[in-house]
Length: 398
Length: 84
Image (cartoon, helix red, strand yellow):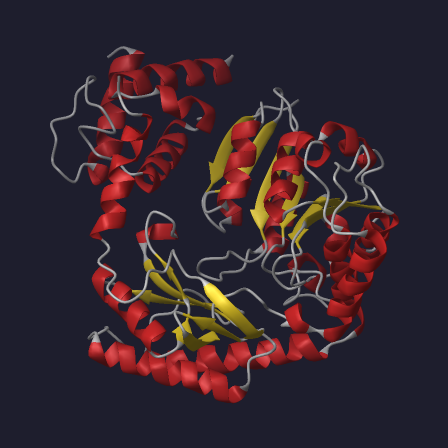
């Protein structure tokens, strides 16, 4: 009989041809974490520049205290799903805090951001519906489509005119759910959301925006790109995560659709997942309230993003997009990208190495994500390190 | 030319930019083995066909389309349905 694992032959070959000598980007282990920006990796104190910890709240004493208190008061876990015994007062309180942040009628909390996309997209759509997604969508959106009975189709990445054209081809009578992300995680490019909203309105399509990476960095209270544009009320569903800016884990969806709550009984990823532990819910609520009331973290994040983006641009690097908290350096040659990543690790700097097929347009990326907790000196250190690896690996610069 | 003959001719033309190995394309040519299209190229090729024929080709049916001939048949069926 054939081996079940035969199908992975190509992937195994790809993995084995990446000749990592000193460190492996897919086997990073942090043995100690000193702060939002420093950890011990391979026995070495390492500057973290690729952890999506945008607001730097993972060690905020208010979030930690809230988690401690909830642990003492409610124990380590709920041992149940939201629809049975897994809803505590704290889960409701977090949903109220999120709905309040967006000014929507409803909010639902899921156990991860991935599950929020699965639960919303697959939960909302049935066999007579159409889902139209951006071609560069996250794996959770593609998997949600695979779970749905709907007809699935794509439009060209971040191209609102292409979306408009493709929506125009659909014969009337079918509900269409358009799915986009606010900020795309690999290159850090922003969706043209106002134009996307206009196309959806024109064709009477529903719109779901995943603000996973834009929740925190964008919007007057960190709500994301729809809020930055003042257009939250024109988006039908906004999904997000607590695992980046909020510094813990979990996902959510907000909406003002009058029947939204039926999804608590129709969304399988919601119904059949164990609910978040009380300590996680408590620190998430504390972080959301901090986002809502303080500007200092968002301001520091953007100062840092600008310092790194401008610095790398001045050095002539090819960057994936305009300035955002995700800054991706595009490296033409795969081996040069691999060697540069290893050398950065050797110099005590952690960034993400992203290679095809996990990247758009098959590019090789050294992907940085900034934090409010980075100091200007740390950004300088990252810049110097990039300059060094570019020289020693003959990376093309403009 | 019948509808499927003209569809085949158009699809062979649309495939040209993706035919890096210069394979001689017929109805029996396979996308994965003969043309070795990766998932990103498949996306671009599907979008090109959608624009050329002014139709929607659902992602759902792609796994079953292994040869050029199967794609010709699918495109003709979809075009027929959207006219109806």
